[in-house]
Image (tube, rainbow, N blue to C red; front, side, top):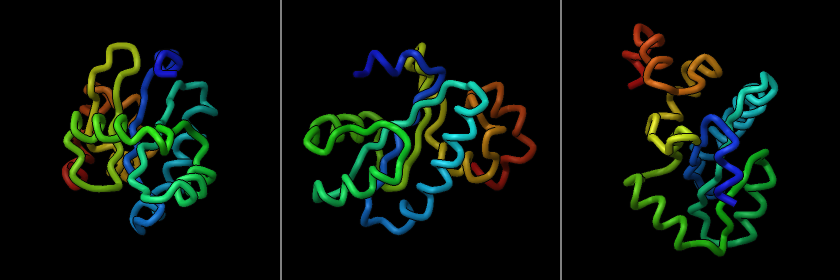
Length: 138
């Protein structure tokens, strides 16, 4: 349930699909990032928002992920999230403050790739502290 997400500090929405090679390349990196942050007792939850066309592919891909997912049958939820955040392509990773629902960044993927756990909690203050390194990322 969505209420369970409020127990976290940050929620990531990961728009991805099994059939997408860049997604398949990024997912293991994101899984390591997720595990490392949560091993440090920080509270990050990620929710997979799939663009898969078949439930079998969705289930297979989800088995590689240590986080939650919008269920395959909930296409309306996927559509609403994609529209709300104007998702134009995959993979896309966005981070939201779980307590306030404030959008922290639409650039989660390049932040994770460039800075790893140093980017957590993806707040304006944290990203400002990385600013000198960010010219090539954002």
